[in-house]
Image (cartoon, rainbow, N blue to C red; front, side):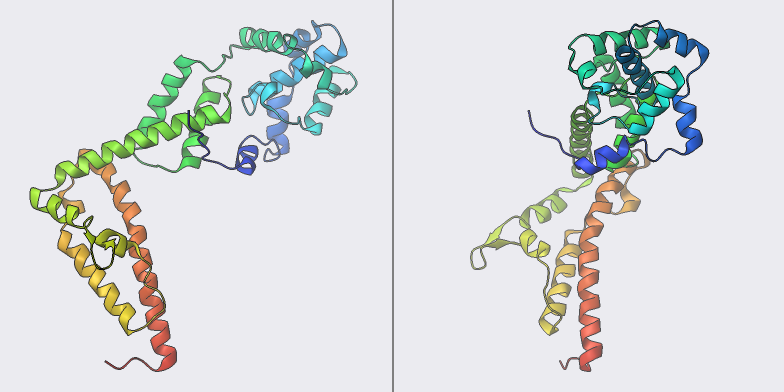
Length: 285
């Protein structure tokens, strides 16, 4: 199975951080009702009470189990301990137990109607993200949406790698769908012109597509002529325009947005050329 790293360690930490909560939000998520306190205190020992209290808080926000947390916030530990009128202790012993934290988590799920991530939850999330990706392909947007939707349904988050794997698969399938739709819009002549871009020139050892992707380099007379040649080749392909795309396949515009990156490179080359011309008094042709 491949590794799906859509986010950095710092981004993953920020997505689940409690630091972004305001004081009111912090208290809103983590303040216990009398029934909460009664439920927690029904367990014996300071260690178990603090452990299950923290698990209840983390289930509420950010919607994870204690096992997925590298280090529990000291402010949260102190806030939980103060409400339960118990001392703060090191959680290493509690976390080192194989069964106790899991038993407590299952109790919380039964008591508060939470559920663990499952194949059913994955199917639910797949449907949500498959629809959302039609409008926005950004990985952070999709990850945030996944977290929000799971939390909304009281489904505890899985490992980040599972969410990233699901999003990567959905994005790959969506891209295949988009390219298939684009190919369907092309005429036979347009397909032949696009195929010609892949033919390698025996002299330059480079295809036209590779040549189009090259950054032109320093501003000069040859540079601007090279850019004009590129534009001429692109126009010669006569790819489908936005007006020819049916409404039901509007998501193809996502691909067109990607292609605009190439336009930005050409635009930047023009700016370099223009700035250099201004500082040197212009080129003579």
